[in-house]
Image (cartoon, rainbow, N blue to C red; front, side, top):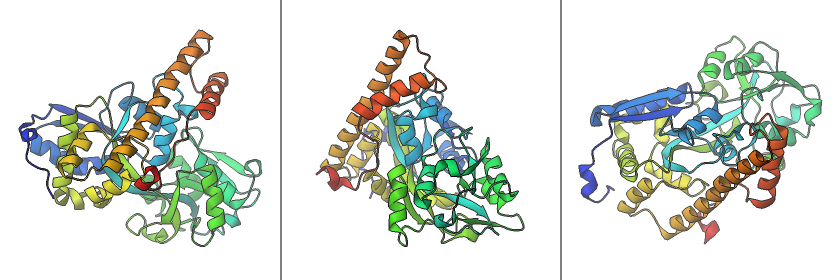
Amino acid sequence: MVAKKSSRQEYRWPKEYRILTWLGTAVDGAHSWADLLAEDTGMNIIVGGDTNTVNRFRWLGRVGLSQQTIGAPTETSQMIMADRKYAVRDGGPFQVRVLWMQSKGNAGFFTRGDAKIKTPHDIKPGTRITDMNPYVAATRVVDGLLAWAQVKHEDIVWVPVHNSDENISAVVEGRADICFNMPISRHVQEASKNPLGLDMVDLNAEQDPEGARRFRERDPLVSFGPVPKESLAMIAGRWGTQGLNLELTNAREPAEQVYHIAKWLDENHLRYKDRHRENRFRTRQWLMKALEETFVPVHEGLKMYLKDLGLWTEKHERRDRKNLDTLTRYVDSYQRLMWAADDAGMEVRPENEKWVQLWENYRDAYLPPIKLHNGLEEDA
């Protein structure tokens, strides 16, 4: 299936395009297709990376230093809801849009290969878990693990870490029993080469649906599934968290530009599919699956492309209007609350507990929760 012919074929590509994505394997993934796009179009495509998700969304949103980034469901929801570290003046919710599909992401709770902790029920008072708060915006996923294990937060020994490398190193060196990380990250791949190897706490939702239910009460954006061998062979088959990650852009980006980037990604998939392991998910089929569940509105340019393919339905339009309405309520409310904070002489920064409470109290009382949808029929 190809898009019907139109005057868009005469499109002139911009001279420059900026992508700021997750530092590490996601940068390699971006180069795997963006370098080909640059060759085909003559664009100067600048690819950078940062592990700080607050910054990545700030730069795509209010600051305007980038035109594209990736977003997992959890981190994207944290940005829209301005959770804690996202509650900065030049951050928080903005008019974010779906550009294309990025990957099917896996993550999990890593242990050293000789660890006796195999399931959440092996976690007991005194278990040592890395504290990622110094560098991660929010850690609801850890709260979910403790809910599954039925262990109180105060009964855990927390080991502060300040970056992804230190996070997994704490487990390898025996300073912590558990850390949350992604199997495809460079730090985890390198750590897996230690003589004892790595293992993962098995979050098998089929074997323990009640534990999984408790987890999702704390983090409703999480789903569970086995880690594929392509991610990290030594933990293949262990269950971790998973989600469909999207390429995101800003509503201000020109519709024709997004249309042609989406079209190029779709029509050239065979050319870049084998240049990075995540590219097998960067397809139109996976995109349509993600659009059934995402809470992020679709960019007008992508919508135009899907309409040309005959894939955009009234159900998609109804869902998109709902997503846009919810997002706009968050964007407008966040701005009004910042003005209210200014009027009260309140400093707008996440370290200011009064500001955080002002925003979160309003959000929780008046705005709908951000969550994944259960298919397009949910709004029928």
